[in-house]
Length: 262
Image (tube, helix red, strand yellow):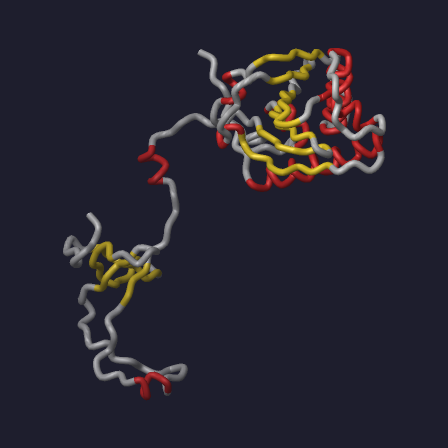
């Protein structure tokens, strides 16, 4: 049976991705066109996104670092017009201009992953986002960015994200066998508190005058029951103070205080 890994995208991953997308968009646009306004508006996991319906354009390589692009306004041909010194809006979009526009965006993808992808880039248009990519905890993210007037939505595959943020949760965690809950509880350390009742007749004034060697009469016999508390303050049981060999010890009584846990 095949299992799909769950990959969590935390806030620190999103901040790192946002910074990387912003930086590479700026470098990419300066390389091809000079001073062009670019901005990444949003980075979020795909499971937090509505409306991933197609059509999308897919840029893919054999190593799985796929990228899906969708223009909310403008189109890939507008990038050719913009980067060639035009106004950024192509009056007549041709198939050739569209393909060149996607080649420009593929150059940005190569910059995004810090190294050239292996193999020839394949372009497919009119596709949908695969179900395993749009699924919850897939590790894919959606980025929304702008290049001048062009508004672009971009889905980064999990493998592409891991190229940018390699230290994803669980990448270095060794799998362990599932144990019994009872065994886990028994093997987990904790601490206990034993509290005594306030001494009779001890005023605040007397308390403030206590020094090393002062004796406080507790007003309880040696075999009196004390209350045993958990670290969160809950009463657990009654106990007696005593000794075992050379160390102080407590002996838990069956007589539990009101509100004690079973």
